[in-house]
Length: 289
Image (cartoon, rainbow, N blue to C red; front, side, top):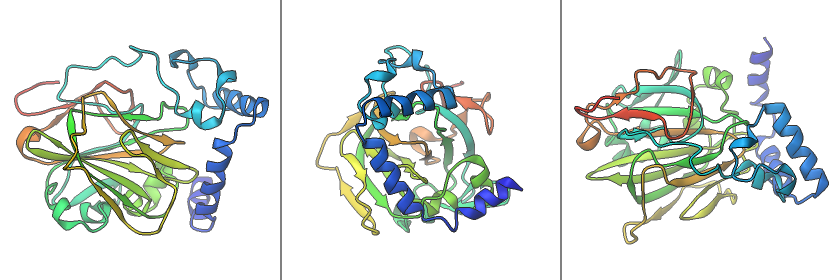
């Protein structure tokens, strides 16, 4: 009952205003007050600061600096796999795309077209392909890394709502990931495109990429696009590609062709399972996990 009320309340609360306020607070340099908030957060969510490159909570100038903290070198070994897990978090869903429908939760699917803001030409490349949806909770490391090597082709900002993306909301709100604000990053690996999609949520102050910096805010209320074909921006497997300021979700799409043909997900994967950056996510063709 409480879970249902929590979901229903999200239709009523001023999510944009709350998110803007959260962004300002998270970037505020409040000295001892900031340190106290960070210490509370670490204790409340059980954040493992021993993994951080800088474990001293008193040294972070603002909450955003703490939230997007780096990990110690070697804290996340990279598995020998065609695709590695790009984040710390939990598996929401993964598997085959049925024609153009992506599974969200029991009783809920959404279309590739909707997820990509009506870009039918791009969506067509992922028909009957593969997807993985990974949820980052507040306690997790919030930088996003590359599942495989890729050359950046395009980036698309798609405006939308800012519902929470926690598991309870994913089970209750139809088309959640195609309704929320999102940043679609289009990469090319060998001859095939693949997508990393950063999905915004309530109090996610902003999303950023390593090549662009902060993408949002501003929030202009319309689709924006950047083309990178004239630039050689290539990121290696395991290299950082972006980050969230507060928790959210990453959706990945892969085509059922070329280097991603016959993709086989890690047999140890299951919905709800905790995952770490660098673990094996999937292999293609004749490889085994």
